[in-house]
Image 1 (cartoon, chains in turn orange, green, brown):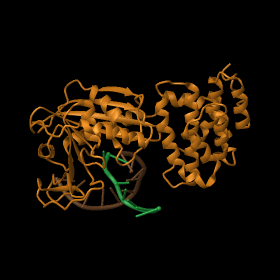
Image 2 (spheres, rainbow, N blue to C red):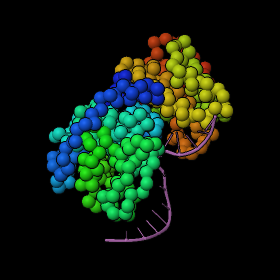
Image 3 (tube, rainbow, N blue to C red):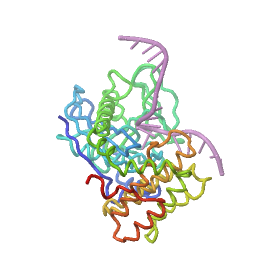
Image 4 (cartoon, rainbow, N blue to C red):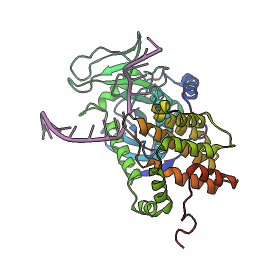
Length: 387
DNA sequence: GCGACAG
DNA sequence: ATCTTGTCGC
């Protein structure tokens, strides 16, 4: 049975795009480009990949080790965690790396060459996912991507093995490599401690039958499986949630609101009254108050979720509830004006229960009064649920 | 300024 | 990445 570990977002992980770009500029100097890398066909080759369930805030990563000569599976490991960053082109690594590192750490054997689903050198700042993972682990890495990103290339000739340069302006940052006759090429770039020739040779060795390397195919299928397992409905938890009188009350309260976004905004405002704000919380408050900004709901949700990572090293119950309320404001605003896809339609049911939790966690008894005022009512059966 | 943009 | 009906091929 493969190992499975759980990770949280690392303390100090970048919360904004600016911070993330600064990290890339800092780490870029550590990439090693002048090693040839392990010869194809010997030792281990490891594929890593990640799958997401944004709705449940779950990310699952897989690492699958293959025997480079036979392409047989030697070992595999998975890890699940919270989503640490929104998807931003050029910042993919910050979304994938924490969970991928945990999966690699859980392997029972050395990974050898790591094949990433994405880019290395071929990146706006020349520091893509494969480069980043290589610098953090010290392992030789390459990137094999399915799309050309922002780069240009001429179509390679028809036969498998043909290639053309992948260009950023005039600079060769990788290759468009045909892995199957007359099938769309893959886009290979160097990560860490591997030459472009070696990277392409490995890619061809790993594609005896399909367009994509066996490493990424195996890792892709395994991380999807791990995600399913992690988010599978737990009958026990579902029963407990369904039996929770607070949830029932929260639903009816929410459905009686004529303007849920404004209402949730007022609840959030009451929750943070007298406490220190973050820019993201202010963002959510502003969002709720201005109907013409509701189309930014998803963006605000992403920002709040990203910023809450910075508070994970000091897990304060009150703070965490406030962030979840702010996330809800973003979700409700988005759901009010679209466009699809929408967030969970049941999201608003949590506003009431979260307000109650905040009042329970707060040291200041005045918080309960403020929350009750903002909600408009308080759950009648809160205290005498089962007795 | 606007759109495009690894997964 | 994820959402999704039908469709082509072994």
